[in-house]
Picture (spheres, rainbow, N blue to C red):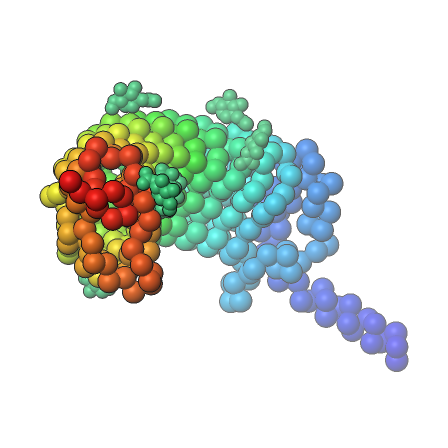
Length: 328
Ligand SMILES: *[C@@H]1O[C@H](CO)[C@@H](O)[C@H](O)[C@H]1NC(C)=O
Ligand SMILES: *[C@@H]1O[C@H](CO)[C@@H](O)[C@H](O)[C@H]1NC(C)=O
Ligand SMILES: *[C@@H]1O[C@H](CO)[C@@H](O)[C@H](O)[C@H]1NC(C)=O
Ligand SMILES: *[C@@H]1O[C@H](CO)[C@@H](O)[C@H](O)[C@H]1NC(C)=O
Ligand SMILES: *[C@@H]1O[C@H](CO)[C@@H](O)[C@H](O)[C@H]1NC(C)=O
Ligand SMILES: *[C@@H]1O[C@H](CO)[C@@H](O)[C@H](O)[C@H]1NC(C)=O
Ligand SMILES: *[C@@H]1O[C@H](CO)[C@@H](O)[C@H](O)[C@H]1NC(C)=O
């Protein structure tokens, strides 16, 4: 009786194997391409159902989520990654010894919506072929060792919601095409902490965007098109660039603006009093610019009991009034 039970249950385990052989082969190839793969990933083995390690789709039994984080795997991303053709999520995060370029094989991931290779030492260019990932909604490539320009082809991704290329060594301008995104609404764009330069394209004024972070680059020109009372933007950070424009002409998104940091630029003019209507504002920084005139007073902020302290306004040409010194 016991023997029968054991036989039954072991055959049940065999029957219960859901992993598709192609996915299993791809995962083993992935592991074995790293010199320390067999040592670090002993549980990825031939006799283990890969659907017990990774999320598989219930219906088609294919691996849909390949997430590997905090791993010391040493080597380059193998082409085998492209064999996991049903992936919706690819996440290689916090892998300091992952090096080399992002392989072209990733374009075979036709269903991928979340493409995240971040906090690794992947280098080379941001590949223009990522524009072939037509299902992708999020591309996160922050904290890598990527260099070269931003490929303008990324603007053609029809479903893109978030793009984060921050903390790399990217150079050159923001592509003009980013103002003509095919995707109807980009919720977040972060290009911060790179070495981008050149004038910001005026086309960016067309963007419908909720969060934009261009801080810590060497961008120049007139960034006033990012503003406008009719937009829905909630966070703008253009701190530490070379932007030069007249702040007096800017109008703010009074219903939605939560964070505004324009510090360390060459912005001139005065702070428009219309900013007082931005009742959602929680962080404001206009310090280290060339602003002049009286700081508007009479904040009616929903989430802050008072206004902003002097570090939000210091180091301008001649700003005055509370919380700085009285105007003469
Ligand atoms: C890249 O490698 C260097 C050492 O070679 C290491 O200090 C750094 O933390 C790595 N970067 C990431 C994001 O892991
Ligand atoms: C970053 O990439 C450059 C080449 O683009 C290379 O010389 C450097 O060693 C890389 N840094 C790390 C930590 O891998
Ligand atoms: C804006 O970006 C700078 C540099 O990346 C950062 O130090 C600062 O905290 C950001 N400002 C806000 C309000 O988040
Ligand atoms: C930043 O750009 C300006 C031109 O706008 C140029 O003169 C300057 O050398 C650049 N700085 C760096 C650090 O690249
Ligand atoms: C702002 O958001 C509202 C509601 O979320 C939406 O109806 C409106 O079309 C948006 N306007 C713009 C310019 O995106
Ligand atoms: C900012 O305020 C602090 C006290 O809150 C004061 O010590 C400091 O001198 C002020 N700095 C300027 C530039 O007004
Ligand atoms: C404003 O920015 C300056 C310079 O980047 C920074 O020193 C200061 O702490 C910031 N103040 C606030 C309130 O964010």
